[in-house]
Image (cartoon, rainbow, N blue to C red; front, side):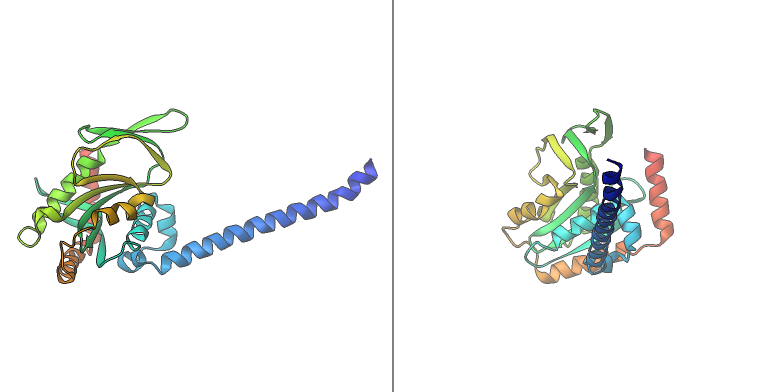
Length: 243
């Protein structure tokens, strides 16, 4: 028996080493291809975010994955990330995660890179996120949150773009499950990220903007995304004081 164990130990050690090396190689390859994809993305060109920062920040990574879906939508379109525009009501600025300016309309996207089960109605003030261990936590209704963004964008572009072109899209991670979501407004859509492209394609049945209008709105909003760090910090502080 001892002789058998003595003979097996080198084999087991070798097998373990091979498995470990294979795991490291697989992990390294995944990291390499994920980084290369990020560095070549339009999101990287637009934001100049560093890969290591993006992959550690679930909010940034969620925005990046959302824009990858937008890049697959046919037709003429451009997107702007983290746009700061004056609030439609009150003082200060509001920040819009992703604005997709497309020939079929302007899509105001709120990215929620959440996991777990999601429950909520359009009329509710708060929605619920529940995990497998039954732990629950509340978060502000993203439809109401994005409606403020949409109204601010309508006002910001007032006189150049009509209200009928705007759509509000709440984008949740593929890691969550939308359990009981009730939406009443026709311009509001709550989807998981892997359904985003399909949803926009269904909405993109009519061209409402010319390529020239798409370019003009893009240039106007791009200026609002290239703000000083002080503006971003002030916005974050205003959110903290609100919550």
